[in-house]
Picture 1 (cartoon, rainbow, N blue to C red):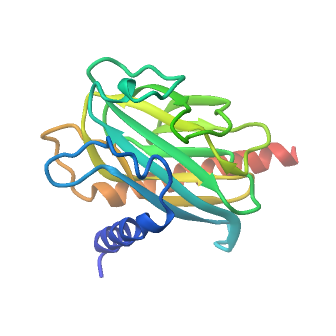
Picture 2 (cartoon, helix red, strand yellow):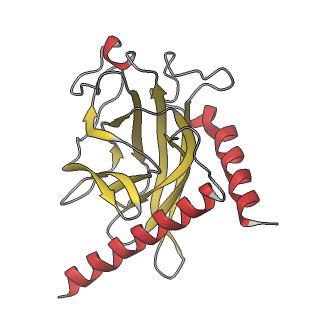
Length: 220
């Protein structure tokens, strides 16, 4: 079985599991509907260390996409979307004993205005930093210096483009978890051979490099 098929099956399994674990964003009634699917859900994650052993980094990420002009009408606070753009929102829930120190979402095209928000049942610590990382491209939210247990605040960015399913990752101080699938902007009319597989590989490499840098810093 090809890796791309395995990735697609993983997506389907994650989406099927979403209703049992869904939180406020995953059940947001104003989520974007593209004529075929409603863009909200919940994706579980399991962390692994550098020896590929499972760790206590476990939980899930709620997510939702809003059509342009919708988010600012719903009573959320702390974030003003870029006018005329879609809003991509996430909330991580760390249920294990390992404190979550970051969430990353793969990007293939334009995204901007990275930030956080609360309201309508979405609450938790705000990130210490929210930013774009260029190589491989990703949206990132850090929770330094100690990480968090429990739920984060809403984590958000804007984009002129509607959604596709890609991936992301969470890390703690010693492990990384692939979060598959997560929504990410899709620029119209661009070729996407092996998109999901390539993005998954890229975000995993990025997370692994960040872990190695962190380990070196702790032992210097």
